[in-house]
Structure formats: structure tokens, C-alpha cells
Amino acid sequence: AQAPRALAALRQGARLAFGPLWVTADAVGSARTSLRWTQVQRIEVRGGFVAVRAYGRWQVWATAASGIPNLCVFQALTEHLAGAGRNDD
Image (cartoon, rainbow, N blue to C red; front, side, top):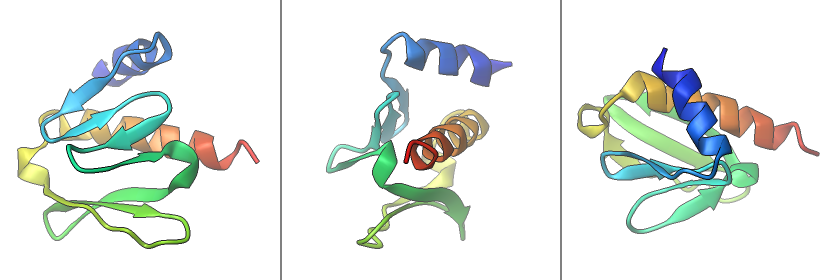
């Protein structure tokens, strides 16, 4: 039930924090870097870490999944937003 509310907040321009990571309707990022959704290939949990892969540069951010509050909400949002970015071609 949190993911629909979070998605609605993003549509209204909110920036949502998930521990060291943040999400907006346009991008995902951390304290060191950010990527627009159109650049994101996928975001997944591998070996206990959140990995962000970007088209063309195979950049991987590694953040411990245990340090991400509301990990399921983060995953639902990022899956939706990354998919939406790919479908805008």
C-alpha cells in the first residue's frame, strides 16, 4: 500500500529518500552520483547489495540492501520508473 502513495508523491515532484539512495520522477541517485531514468537499465539486489546498471557504461553502485529502509517500496518504484523510461523511445 506504500508504493502507490510513494508513486503519487513522485508525480507531485517529491524526492523520496531510501537511506543513502533517493528517487525522483526523473532520476535515481546517491550522495555521489545520479542517473536519469532513461539511462537506467535495471536496479536489482544481488548478493545483499543494491546494484544500479546504466545503459552504455555498466556503472554499478553497491549499497547494502540492509541499509535501505522500505526496500520493497524502493524496488517497486525503481522497477516502475526504469520501465517507464525505457518505453519513452
